[in-house]
Image (cartoon, rainbow, N blue to C red; front, side):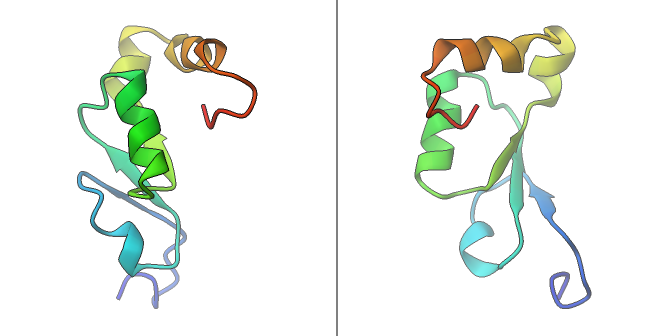
Length: 75
């Protein structure tokens, strides 16, 4: 319904929506380890990750994730 009304993307707390819509799905909620983040993306449970708490606690967290992985990483 949201997709048909023109919604550009959605942000959810569970990864069960990505397979049912054709718009980008962002995942939020207790995304606490780099391994978990990569696993969620690899399984196709979302198109992007929302790192609220982690980014508030450490504004450089996304940059740190990026430096932990190769250039081919999605971070």
